[in-house]
Image (cartoon, rainbow, N blue to C red; front, side, top):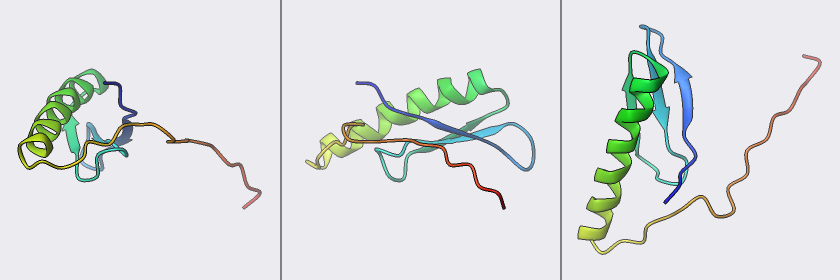
Length: 72
């Protein structure tokens, strides 16, 4: 499965990530590469927990990400 991962700079340094298709799935790392590796593990654990609970597993189908520029 492929998931979109949003990467944010952390206030204390490093990065934190979120997976929009899997609410509650977050991770972090000192570098982007480490954050993405940790996020892969978080996704696998999150999906495994959802399966164990018999819940539906979301994917990125229909997820759109855009960018808007404003004058403000």
